[in-house]
Amino acid sequence: MKTAIAVLVIVLASSAGEVLIARGLKQIGEISTLQLRELLVIGGRILTKRDFLAGLFSMAISFCAFLAVLSWADLSYTIPATSLSYVISTLGARLVLQEKINPLRWSGTILVCFGVALISLP
Image (cartoon, rainbow, N blue to C red; front, side):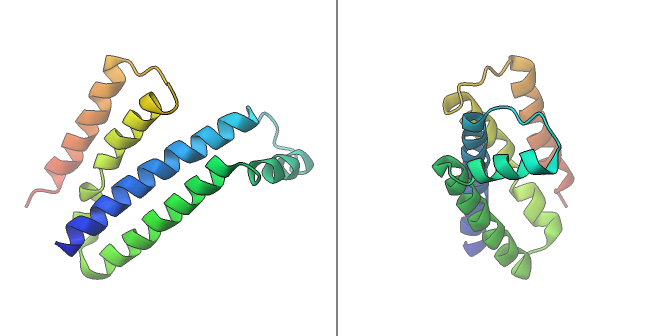
């Protein structure tokens, strides 16, 4: 039971983190330079965005839960169990970020989840 709860925390926190970080970065605009000085300025602007910081916090929660699960469960179980985050993140991209997701991309996302689940069978 504790593993199922921890995996759920990983999936939800990771998905929320990805969506929030993406939303925060979209508020900054496209990063089109690799010059160190400009990247430092952009980095400073990113750190002022609440969505980005909330996403970072969510990803930290996910990572801590992932570490906890790895301390008692096999990696070969943990990775497939967290593959649902692909679907949740894609759903978040559609609902929160208003991204247009075509049927082929949805099919691919779901197919990846089924594939990961399939390789995790004994």
